[in-house]
Length: 319
Ligand code: AVJ
Image (cartoon, rainbow, N blue to C red; front, side):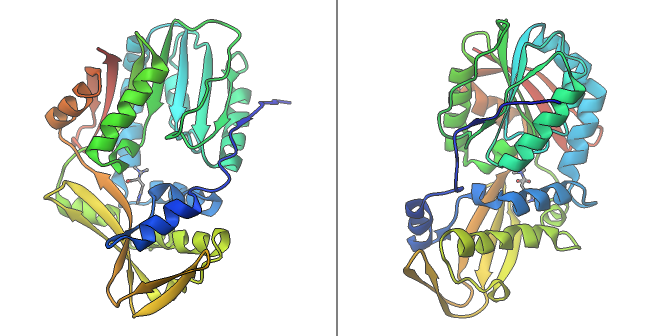
């Protein structure tokens, strides 16, 4: 029996009523992308990761397989590993297999079921490792659970290029926050998606099976459930494209007809063709990224890429 006790900060919903309504009342309607990750959305995201067109997951896994022992060496012995948005923790074993006597593993995720299940599996796989899951929205302050053994250094793991979902200014702020959590001497291992052929990017967010479309549209289903909304999913179109001016994928839900929708008792009007912006996914090149992290108090200690230069994993240390 692997009884991992979960610290539950009870992120009951992905977003507050105010946050949702503020987004839907603004001239460019928008919703926070964390709403994509309810239980069903998290499952759809796992399916996205297995799609032929969605290259980032496989590229990152290849990098981890080739270089995780290098990474573990940079991280050093007796670390406390904190994973931001651990999801199903599929990449973590690649790192844990090489780490020298890690003190504990703290996965943080908003999706309670997935967090619980993946924590149980990891605890079973690494019997000597303290697994201390925290169910929380990792963009809000949280407390690190106590560990039996003292750590030599705190290292955050933030794979999946999820940092790309922040606009660069917010990314900087968030990186500084991670720096506060890790403290002096801390490290940060993170995945970053690189600029590339826009057609390849386009395909990754417009897969043939329509899984990304279902993932995007699921946000409306969630609003129907959690905010008594009246969205008809057939009246919205998933629309994702690469914007080279901002070097980001934008994911939208476009209203196919003029319509009114109730959300938490408030009437929201849509013109035909009007969109709700649900996600941005910024792409970087190495030097831009080094500048960004530098402005947030981090130093690029080492970088690894795949043979096609699609993706990079970087180890940052606090300056
Ligand atoms: C997990 C946030 C990095 O932006 O590529 C996948 C999420 N959105 N397909 C990304 C996502 C649409 C993904 N991240």
